[in-house]
Length: 446
Figure (cartoon, rainbow, N blue to C red):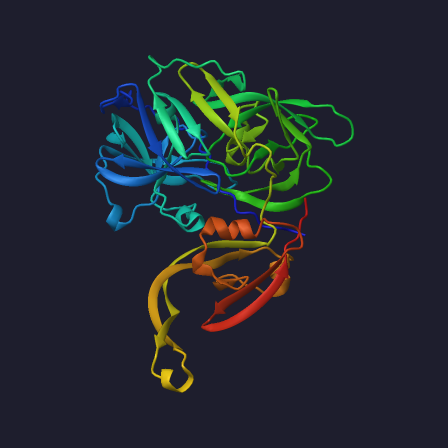
């Protein structure tokens, strides 16, 4: 039976275009050696503020991209872009390349750090529809252009990023840390790891993995990139995400273990990708897969491109389990809608005091109308429990287990769909102006 898991994947391939050399980011604040930035963690992805030519935008910080990609601009977000040229981009997925623009000589600013002469790639159509999938406005993705200039410390627990000057930064001794030598291919970082694929025995396979903070899954593995790497017997086929060149297909499952140095992560979810969707990603023959945000968020991470190393330290969520969406529903943000809310006010009166010597209590009911977040079903996986219950694409969510849907964030809705096998989900939806109720149970398949 197929299941649907909401995973956001952003992997872009290199483009053979000569671009101007870049000056890189410089510290402009009072502290010339460090800058700290707060971020939001949404679906295991890091979202932080970035200015382009003076315009404040929201970007995803992604170690898996080697270019700055801008793809979601409305009239309200319009910015001036310099020196534009037409190009085409090709990424993961089995589809065609997409039309885009390359803009040079732009100014990027992150708090008190600034870089001029930056190149930005602009995709006119938002192929990912990230804003609706994440419940907040996302304008683009940035990676290499930040990491090449700083030592970047990512604290997933406190949701803070520290940018350090590599010329002055000194590592503290850390016996609980594990350091990895990084190799680069097309400006993307790779580290070595070991995976256990078979529950019988304890043999492991050495793998080279892309460190991809822009993937929300825990682990991706490329089938047949090594003889041992094959989908386990227990799996379900699914759409794993969307790349620039179309939908990315594969099989979802679990593996007994992945080892990152001395850190052993047991029973992580793993997605096995087919050769069609990953044809271009496999141009780096040594690559066996990716490590994404679902795994990285269990560590404090130092990303050090200048010194070609990545350092990990376990945080409090290291031993947490790995879950996935067991509902079969792809729910997305649907803008805001006017919601009628009931308000009851308690009023005390001593009018009847002479009769019963007690105060009377009255309840005055009134109603208010407010604009609240709205969510709708984007896709229903065929033969999933939600599909069998009768839920359909474009159904608008009104209530989940008795609570108004607008009281949840999109991440909280996803969490509801990941809680436990056989958990009952009650939903009230609106379909073509008619309110309807449905009930189904979550199903664990891997």
